Image 1 (spheres, rainbow, N blue to C red):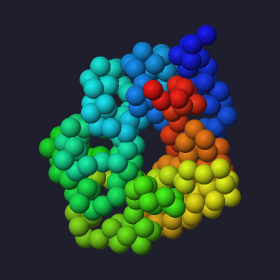
Image 2: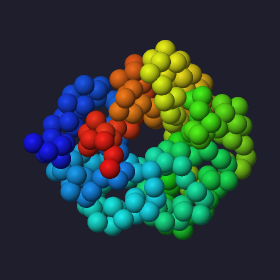
Image 3: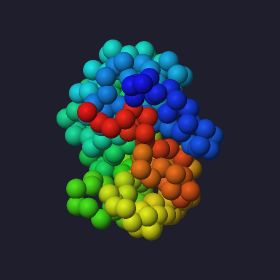
Image 4: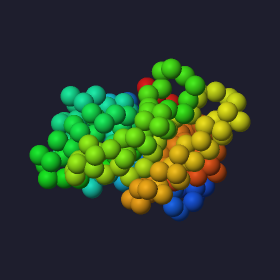
Length: 221
């Protein structure tokens, strides 16, 4: 049996294991339309891409009741291509990016939900803001003037390591940031952390949104 034929089963297993309040973003990067339709026909509606070009191509070809999440690093000059339809932008890491999202959302008379990406991993390759940078942004006049953007929570990516204690401490740090920020941002409702290899640990540490690709679709092409 091919992996594609087990996509429905993989989805059902993950959904049966996670609490009801945890949202599952099925990560479809490099995956063909047929795989995504397999998950769609199994009832799943939340999908995530990390490249805007691929996100747009799939949006154009797939049913319009899909909730698309941009989970990768976002370049400001690419925001305009997804502003019409994207449901949630996970990796927001600067005020300038928020201002660009606001500008493009305004053109489509939309309010776009976003998550601030906090750098919790030890690798230099991971993007994100520090806790103090994020707090400064959220309390700034410039952010409050962005009426077409709602920052509704935080996201982060743990270090790529087998050391479970390190991953746990990074997730706990992000959860503490989330709880602290939520006190002065009552619209905060999303903590996006955890992927195929560590989502169970992330949920234990307070995550209510996980981004899972290979455990559903098999390893990337």
